[in-house]
Image 1 (cartoon, rainbow, N blue to C red):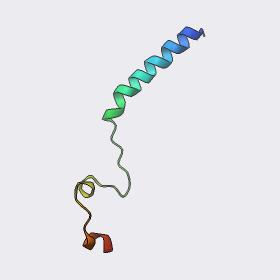
Image 2 (image 1 turned 90 degrees about the vertical axis):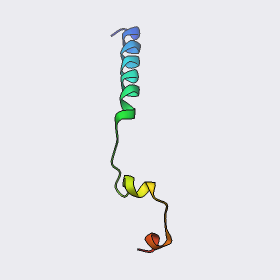
Image 3 (image 1 turned 60 degrees about the vertical axis):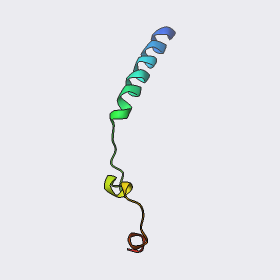
Length: 47
């Protein structure tokens, strides 16, 4: 492999990942979207 070929391939993959990342939504355990939008109340913190 030539050095310029590796640089071009790496750049192309980097740009592809940069374009795809905003569309990836990972569900994190303990963080539901409905819960994150609501303010934290004292009654919900005690339960």
